[in-house]
Length: 183
Image 1 (tube, rainbow, N blue to C red):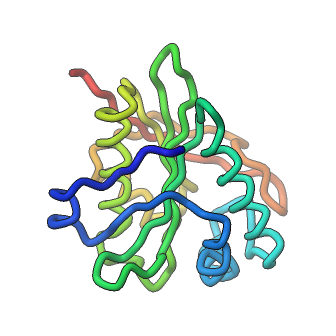
Image 2 (cartoon, rainbow, N blue to C red; image 1 turned 45 degrees about the vertical axis):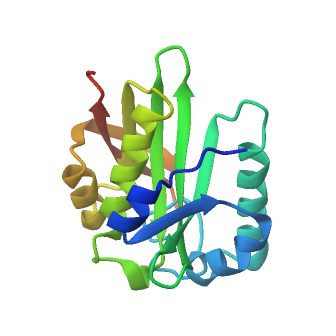
């Protein structure tokens, strides 16, 4: 099973809670994964119900592996425990202790600091609980909101990955960001 990212101290200081992803979460995830603005910079979506069900099924399968390389949690707004997104920490290389973070939030939550909180928590837990030395993230060059979040989290842009992802129409570049744990 996936590791928990909550402590009692975090619960008091946070706007958000993380809990293990469950198959039945697909319905709440679909409320935003079906929106065109959410997938504007993504190689997926807007999702059909089947797309969202398949996505959640894949993640649940991955996180339940004996030694998972993919970890995923639902993001809940603390005030009402409403599901508002998904957070992922993927172990890219166990020997070199490298991981990658990804997250997606319901657009009603954009611009409220929640993306920054999610990314900071994933980075902190990647270093503390998973003992990673390097954590990276990518984003579309025109996704100004994601660029700001990654910079606020102390990540540095390393460069541009040309033709990085296959999109519905052609390929897209991605900007590569990372942060190191020098401790």
